Length: 260
Image (tube, rainbow, N blue to C red):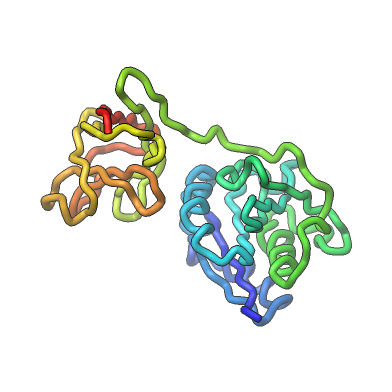
């Protein structure tokens, strides 16, 4: 049988020691697990940024993997601890604060972490990642069924997920996040074009040339391209678009469309 896989995402910082403590809790319970870090460098408290990383990374793993994600400004409050199961059967464990928005919708399910026979009692009020979510993730990866964790939750929290608007031959969206290269991920997906083609791309007051690959741009040129996640990205060839444009989350992006 394949080894169980558990992934980790947090805003703890890779060098903080907190990710290692979560991994240790999983390995104490599941010594043969394969542990994979998605990222521990999500900006502090940036739930949307964490959700975007999960959206990009989780579908690339085997569906049997368990994904532990903690970007949790409300740790220790009344926010609920959940296991979310998406329509493909992927299981995500973490706080009910919108972090799992990309995996909610028709066919998904959410379960409250509450069964005292499975879920640790009295976890540290400041470190649910280690004391609550890691033990549950290990139990699931070892073959546990999400339905046993607790009652089904009918109203898991969802973010106000940014989506583009369409009017008068244009598609209007916004920048959502910058990656380590300064490339700006936007709220516009390739599927939003429907049967239209892109005539021009404007980000803020700047015009970007639509290309298929980074290599098609000239060094220092502002370009737009469809990234590997299916979202439109804004980049500077061999540069840093976020820094050079002075733009970040919320900056407007506008596509002028033409018939495909």
